Length: 475
Image (cartoon, rainbow, N blue to C red; front, side, top):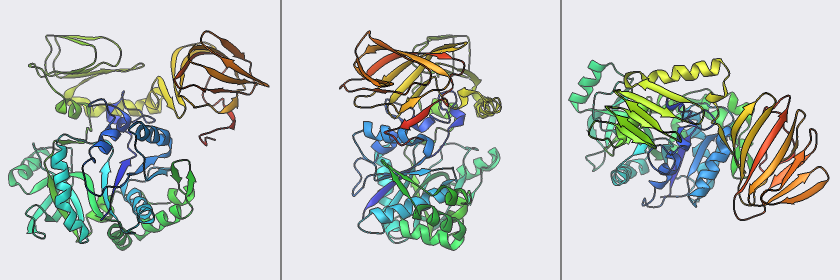
């Protein structure tokens, strides 16, 4: 039976600010190795039998990030479904189930529902848990994977397994009930009993069985999703939904909508070095440590420092005489937090939102489908950007009402549309684009094109772009 991985990639990861931003959240970051968390999620599927190309559910704002990171791996997705608004996991999985049924020759494939931003250290144990779960899922059970707890965690929901086992396996048990995040004393009791698992948010079931149970318990969600996907609009590699229909869909998790109500849910234990990387301390916990309990990444010097996580992106970070801290930096922000208070990082993000600051959404370096730009300097009436354009890519045909631009090529070759002219520029050559002139930049070469852009004018915001043509379907 075909197994279709469904990758849920809609999170914002606000607790990992400043690395994680709303337009570039943690699933697209290389936090634990050279691959991003999304890419690690896809890589750990290698070696499973009968696995098809993944089906990815993503926010519309992240569509090019998803497509590019899959392309970098030399892979392709069976579909990338774009949610115009976030409506939690129950509707997202419903959309995936409907789309999977239309894609699969079997018409009723198995869905392996995974988050794009989890860490699993022991891939072999992960595969074994899936193999253990397959017979139950094939028989119509809805399987959830319960993480074998290593300590009395108060930040996760729990699953209580009954003593009743399913089939011939000693690892598949009926779920007695789901419980909310406990206090410390209750969590200690759960750990001591041996009957409870952390709720991982990973599932395995037939597409039809999930839709049947959703129809039974939340027909309103099912109907809204059916309307939304009935008028889907293919766009490049993406599947766009009917925005009005999906916006009307209730916001509900798969646990509340189905798993806590159905009598056909079973749990398979998973002991595979799992982490949801929900905070800086959870990331520090899975990183290698020195003899003083420190974890470091990047250019870091420690002096008299203990139990501290330090992450440097570009700057040298030196610490002297500190304990139990998280210190991390990006081009435009630095975070220093006590390990006991890292959950309050979310409050910083809320303040940034309230003050309408760009640091909550974007990094200084912003990725686009054609490449990226880095805002390296800004002042009154000017801005300087380092622009990189991928081979064969081009920006939209556009104009600006409030700014002029001067482009200087520093690497590669550029084809520039500048009003009625088409100009070929090579290294150390430049062109000037006055306010109101229609223009476009293209890389015809086989290597990255790099240039310095100097903007000048009374308004330099990114919303001062009037597009006439665009390869990537942007408005």
